[in-house]
Image (cartoon, rainbow, N blue to C red; front, side):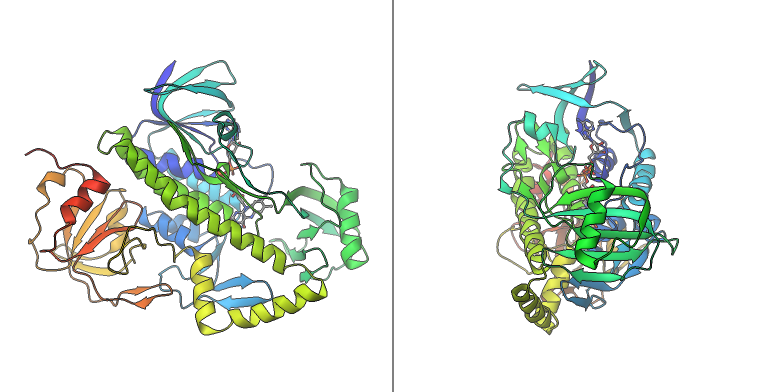
Length: 488
Ligand SMILES: Cc1cc2nc3c(=O)[nH]c(=O)nc-3n(C[C@H](O)[C@H](O)[C@H](O)COP(=O)(O)OP(=O)(O)OC[C@H]3O[C@@H](n4cnc5c(N)ncnc54)[C@H](O)[C@@H]3O)c2cc1C
């Protein structure tokens, strides 16, 4: 039996990010991953959203990803391409990047941190008691941990073994996704067939074709046959374009489900293990990363006995609604992609609405993940929103806010009278920074907000408290989020 503070089942995007976050916070974390290396059997996500890129920026690693991808300053709505260049962020673009490259790069970062990997074996079960979890592996070994996190994908064994319900919507439509050669030049671009979307595009080599086609009937099963791809192409285009040399063919559906709870005792869920939905809008990987960044610091503080276990309840109250909203949006997009006459009329109407200023601002902010506001009560508009990456002037020179979050520790930003705050009882946990800021404070959707004087920023970049130096409440906020004061 080997001990670790936290064991993560699954080293896909969510599990890797969580491992990185925990390691940064000094937690002894181990990841069990079925795959022997990071190679993916199939191509999946193709891009990162602005908020995800910001989160990578908060750890000082965004450039590793940005340098490999292609920036697109547009958000896609069925029937409309919406300019996103006015999003108030340094990363006002979607980044085209294949999941394989994303995982490789993230794994390289995690490899630089003290994370133990058990590769080429599976978690086969667990048993939890009052002090920890015994985790059994497929090679017969056992691990003991204070907490176990299931980042093991949509078919999560951890979710099932914990007896967590996965309510939602059964699939209505299935799609084939493929990469192949075509003997004839196909019709490029997006087409709305009666049942749903068809999209054909050139792959990076400029010759091969990558595509998604809706099937005429709902089919299930992971290993579709070439004949099924041919039939789906013929149904939409009247020809299969001589499709051949298929290097990848897979099926997905529009099933949408979400775990009823994200925690059962000492077992937690994150990423696809907690929520599945259609890839419409390309959000799954992104919200998995955001789950991990929300959970990492909280779990680290609970494991380190800085905070009570109740801090973990905020993971559920913050992230469950965020994913529930994504499920709703993917269902709406899937419905709007149907090509019958009535849906065509609705799509035309809705795409017109989305081009108007306010809906446009709302949609791009929502799809980018930048508008998320955790419900931390009434107060300054910044409360519960992400902290913008403003330019600060400090005694040590100019710096960006995000650079203060590189080590995943909380920051108390004093923009008022220097040296006017004393947080000695939390000084072992919270960085106090005196700074000036001449930037305008602009939030997605809300626009310009009043510049605050004191801002308490959580390690995930969300604002936990805003106020004046003299205002009561700062001590309570510090205790709520970062544990009770140290006895002096
Ligand atoms: C066709 C398609 C297109 C997509 N496009 C997009 C997109 O454009 N944008 C986007 O954001 N998302 C997209 N997604 C979704 C995205 O791929 C997933 O949301 C993302 O991979 C979820 O990451 P995860 O780490 O939570 O789960 P996974 O990626 O499923 O990783 C789970 C990991 O756990 C391992 N594992 C499973 N069981 C065990 C076990 N018992 N023991 C040990 N290890 C285990 C697996 O090997 C795997 O590595 C797409 C998905 C599909 C299918």
